[in-house]
Length: 529
Image: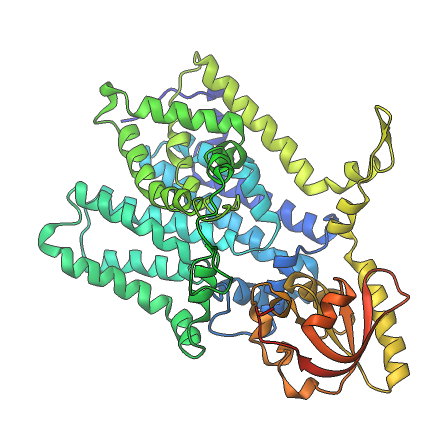
C-alpha cells in the first residue's frame, strides 16, 4: 500500500478530512469560472466555439467532422440562458468540474483511499495549463476528457473488484460510445484497458467472446447517431478523417510521394513539455522511474502507473505514427495524459517532507499553473498594454493579435453596414458568404438576428465543413440563385474563381468586405481547380 507520509502535510491535514472538502473546492472553482465568463471574460468566441454554436441551431444525429454532443450541450445551455458567449462556454466549465472530481475519485481508488492523492489529482487537473484552456473555451475536448477519464476509471474499478461480468463490459463500452459522440479517438482507450484486464485475470479466456460482444454492443448502441447520420450521406465523416492524413479517399488531395518533415515528429516528442509544462513533465518522469523500481514490483504505485501507461500508449503511439503524414496539433494527444495525472497524484501524496526535489517541482507546478491561469483569463490586457510600445528600439505591434481575440465585432459592423447599403441598392436582402467556416460561424453569432452564413472554403480548394451539408448554407441551393450577397475575407480574384456572380466589387467598409450581385452558383464542384 501507499505510505502514509505526505509531501504537503500541513495544508492537507486540515482540508483533507473527507470528500466534502474536494467537492466544495470544485464547486468554488466552478462558481468563480461562471462568474468570470459572465462578467469578466474579454474574449470573443474562437472560430470552433462559434461553429459548434451554429451546429446547435441545427440539431442533428451527427455532423460532418464531429459527433453531436458538443452541439447538444451548447443547445441546452443557450436554451436556458440565451445566445451569449458565456452560455456557449458554460458546458466547458461544467465538464471541467466533472472531470476534476472523477479524476480525484480515481486517484483515491488507486491509492487505497488516500485523500491526499485525491487532492493532488484535483489540483493537478486545475493547474495544468492545457486543462485550464479547455475549461474556458467550449470545444469537443472538455466533454471528451470526461468520457476518457470515466472509461479509464471504469476499467480500473473492474480490475480492483475483479469484475468480469457482461454488464461491466457493457458499461465500459457504453462510456466509450458516449465518448465517440465527442471525439472518435476515444476508441484508442479501449485496447490498453482490455490488455490490462486480460493480463490481470479479469478478462478471462473463457469469457473473451462474450466480453468483447458486450463492449462492442455498448459502443455501437451509444454511438449509433454517428452511423445514422453518415449512412444517409455516403459517409462523409470517414472522408474527413482520412483527409487529415492526406491519404487517397479523403476530403483533401492526397500527397504525392512521401512529404515527410522530421520536425513533425521532433515537435511531437516535445509535446509533454508543452502539455504538462516542464515541472509537471519532470514529475511525471520521476513518478514513472519510482514506480518501476525493482522493489516496487508489487506495489499500488506500480499497478496504477502500469494501468495509466496502458491507457496512454495507444493514443500516443497512434499520433506518433500520424506525424509521418502530417503535423499533429497540440490538443490531439492530450487525452492520453489525463490518466497519467493519477499516478502523479499518488506519487506526490506519498512523498516524505524531506523530498526536496519533489517539493520544488510541485511548487513550480503550482506557480506556473497560477500564472498561466491569470494569463489565459486576462491575457488581453497585458497584450493591449504593450501595443505600440518601444522595446530595445523596436515598436511592438500587437494589434493583429488583439483583432484575433477581441476584434471581430468591428468586422461585423462593417458587414452589417455593407448589407444595408446593398439591400437599398438592389431592393433585395443579401445573403452572407465567408471564406472559411470559422469566419462564417463568427459572423452568424455576432450579426444581428444571427443570420445563416455560408462558407465558400470547399470551393476555394479547402476542406468541406458542416456548412456544405446544412440546407440553408449550401451554396448549391437553387433558392439562392439571383440574390445579392455580402462576401467576407479573401481576395476578389479568389471569389471570382470560386463563385459565379454577375459582378463582384469591393465595398468601402472596413475589412475585406465585397458586394456581389446576382448569384448564379459555384463555378466548380468542391476541391476542384
